[in-house]
Length: 390
Image 1 (tube, rainbow, N blue to C red):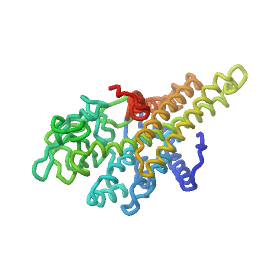
Image 2: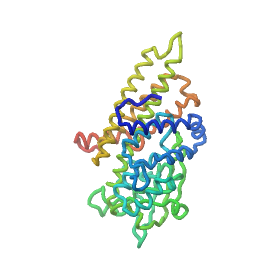
Image 3: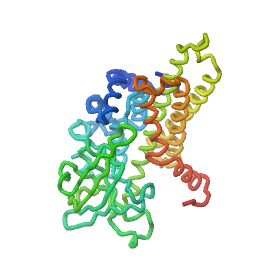
């Protein structure tokens, strides 16, 4: 494994060391077996929960670790650098931003201790819809007030981990678009107890994909939820969800940095040992230069992740920083993946080397949770102040 080289405090370094030790219990064979059968890494998630990592962002008063986004990013980076995959559980980290900043005192006191203890899981983030895709403001799932309840109707897609979560954070329209002054208004966030909802208007259907990501489509058919499931004020949900999205992009970026480290570490170790034409292939510049470029890109991405995390912890808005970190890190990890495949040659396609699995997993992050083109459009409009392109 390639070690991180950016300076950091002793506490973060200790967290990294502890995560590496935990991940050592879950070697490539564990992940290959799960990948082959498209199974959820239950034992891995249980160990992370028991160690307190999935409650990293939950304040100590609610039983969590009370850590910041920097520490959470370090956890996920190390998971991926060890050849593991944090996709099974990372949502429980990044959704905390929405709940902590905008949830009611009752919601936090009731749910957070249970999440921190591992008694329940908050891992389902239901935003994207098949008809609207990345155009979140065009979503059609509705939540209509009815006495002490809301009635939910609609459909979500790419709602990962829904089959393995007890709670769901849902974004739905509570005011018709025709009745709002701004497109960003009229959407609300709800925290749904899926244990009560399944079979009572909530249906989950798994989607088999090119990587083992436990993703699903979710259907709401007159699902009734209590009014106190509303997070924050009615109609302000889009603004609330952005807190979670910016944290999500920063943490996903940290995973990409970890993937990049894994690919480069795997490739350089192989290049030192593999001999062709009487010499190590790592002696050839055709091998060295792509790996060196990938390493530089991963290091630059790591700096962007650290910058975004620090600004988030200081309470600043990090739309630009989170998007830039995600852009650079996703592209760096893919650059490292390509270099790794070229270095290992035919062996990269053999399941036992884990490269083909990690290669499939790394490709996802140029598409999700936000595509590269949308990030570029955001930077052009909101940072460079160019006219909106869409």
